[in-house]
Length: 218
Length: 234
Image (cartoon, rainbow over all chains, first blue to last red; front, side):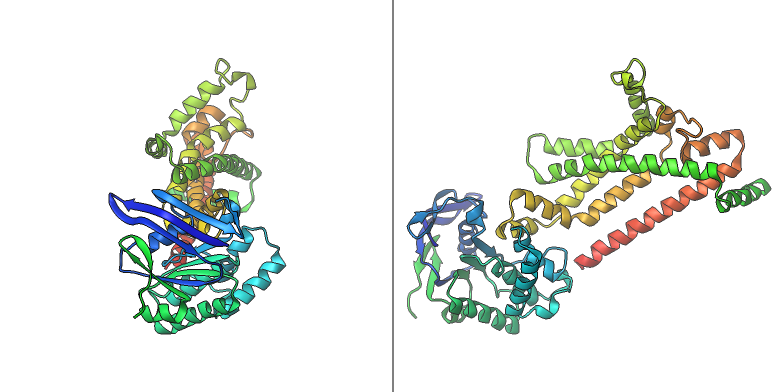
C-alpha cells in the first residue's frame, strides 16, 4: 500500500500548521520525519492515520494501482502509536490482545500472537502484570506491541523515544530495525534526534514551514 | 432507656430466630430495590453514555436536568407514579397501584437519574487518549464506546451501588404507591415507619439493624471499588 498526500492544509485557532503539504510514500520503506517543535509533524501523522481531518487537501491510499476507500477496512490496515500511550486499565496481555479481540480473532490465535509480540518487544515476562504499573519505557513498548500485533501495512510512530531512557530507546530502535529487516511494513516515524533518524530511516524528511521536504545531506 | 435495650434484645432475637415475617419483608425489599436497580441501570447507563460520548444540541442542559433530578424528592415521585397508575390516570387500566410493580416503577424513577448522572461523570472523566488509542487500533465507533464504558467500570459500579443505597433507604414514594399492605407491599422502611407508630419497636429495630447492615455493606463495597479504581490509576 502506498500513501500519498497532496496540498494538505491544517490550522488550529487561526494558526496555520500545515500549508500545502504534499508527499508520496513508497511501500515497505522506513521514513523518518524531523522538524522543530510545533512544526506540524504530529498533526501530519494524525491526519495520515485518519485520526484528524485536514482543512483541505487529499490523502490517498493505493494498493497496487487501486485507490482504497477511506473506510473501516482501511483504518484496520494502518495504525498510529501516539507519543503518550493510552493504556487500557487492564493487564498487559489484554492491552496487546485488544486489536485482535476487536477483529474477532480466535482465543488460541490471540494467545499465540500476543506471546510472540510480547517476546518481540521484550515484555514477555510482564504478560500478567497490570499495564498501568509499567514504566514509561515499557509503556511505550506496550504501545508498539499493540500496534504490531495487528500487522499494519503502514505504521506511524510519533516520537516513540521522546520520553524514555537510553535502555528503552535502544530496545525501541532494535524493534524498528527488526521491522525494517522484515520488510512488510511502511514505517513513518517522527523524531528530534538526527542521529537516530540516520540510524533508522531509509529516507529522511523534514517538516519546514508546514511542508515536507527531503532532508538535505549533512 | 430500658425499653430501648429490651427492644434491641428482642430485635436480635427476631433476627437470630430467622423470624419468617422479618425475612419476608427483607426479601421483598431486596426484590423490589434489586429489580428497580436493574431497570434503572438498563436505562441509566446508556443515557449516561450518550450524554458523555455524543454531541447534540441541548446536551449540557440535559446533563444539568439529570443532575437536578438526582435530588428528586421521593414523595413527589410517589405522587407522580400514583397519579399515573390511579384508576383515572393514563396507566390506571393496568391495575398496578398498591402492588410491587408500582413500587419498582417509583424506585426506578428515583434511581435512574442517579445512575445516568454518575455514569456520565465516570465516562467524561476517562482520558480522551483512550478513545484515540481504540480508534488507531481499528475499533469501530461501537467498539470504541464499549472500550470507554469498560474503562469507566469502577465509576459505573459506584453509581449503581450509590443508587441501590438510595432506593433501599427510601420510604416516601413506596408508601404512597405500595400502600404498605402486609405480606404484599410491606418493605423494610415502610414497616419501620408503621411499627414505630404502633409502638412495636422490636420489629422496627430489627429491620433498622438489617437496613443499617445493608447500608454498611454497600458503603464498604463502594469504598473497595473506589480504592481499586484509584490503585489501578496510581
